[in-house]
Image (cartoon, rainbow, N blue to C red):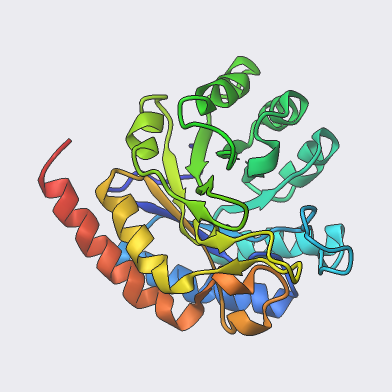
Length: 268
């Protein structure tokens, strides 16, 4: 991915689930940028400009597409960092690519050929979330669609596999398997800890397991870590149940950096 500066450390995609406002986005981006520069972690700010996949019709979806995309562009310019956001249809690809550096394909849409091809043709980096219903091996076809559309700048993200009706589980064998595709593999820590389809219509989560899952990802060879963070997860407008509290991020990244150095010492 051309947005990632080469480093011996893992790279990080992190930010709020959805853009809730300019000040909130700038504060989170500034806080994470300061930490990642000190720890030599290449950083991409993450924020969805709109949430299309919601359990209930009254769930928060965003502050308006253009306003949220303008905030993402401002974050990138202010802190000189790349940014990533989700897209949900082929028509959105060219629009979003004017504002961000990386287009992310949601897990439920990872097989949508028109969406993958449209995203690829923008020339942006493409991050494809692995479907909760797919094997790691099956993701090779999604990656190849992007490449066949003329874009070599693609990554794939593990985000858990459906386990029963209301839980997810991470099969860490998938990380080395997907690395054989010749592209970066990212572990989405916080979405892997979701507990979807709760009877209240609001997704649950296990944030107490964030560090456990992140450590396992580093040990099994993940090139990047994805996580969502918020100053007050209990007040977040989307996915608060599985987010990392922002003031806990620095310690986590310090420990993951130390663990990555240890893993690197063993070689490939």
